Figure 1 (cartoon, helix red, strand yellow):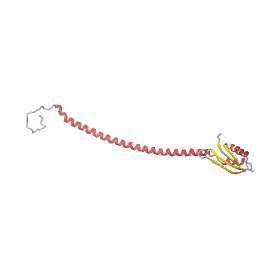
Figure 2 (cartoon, rainbow, N blue to C red):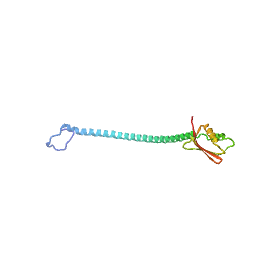
Figure 3 (cartoon, rainbow, N blue to C red):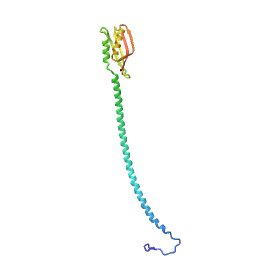
Length: 182
């Protein structure tokens, strides 16, 4: 036996066989596994911290993306509303031809001895290209109604569903004027 290891036991005969020499590697392998486990633990912990940082960065990027997306959706909604308003305004402008030329044309179509007691032009909000016309003429005839229809026709309006009724000296003419585009 080696002199480095001093044994205080008294010499005795061996009761069993000695272990094979290969088992002397067990303590060395134990320390080697301990060092390898420590290395793997440290690298795993560092990888875990890096993964947490990466996850936090990704969560922050996702939150920024969601914020930007909500901002863009809000802007898109506002633009869509403005577009809808602009389209409605364009339809209204297209449909709201000036009503003054109609009233002037009717007044000029009638001779001076005939008076207009009432002239009403009503525009439908649903169909702005249609104008409801009601004219109450004192001392009027059907020839005057034909003059009104021809004067309105020169302004690219077509009389639709015309009605005439005579009540005493007054003649009432009602019609729906529809704008014709050529």
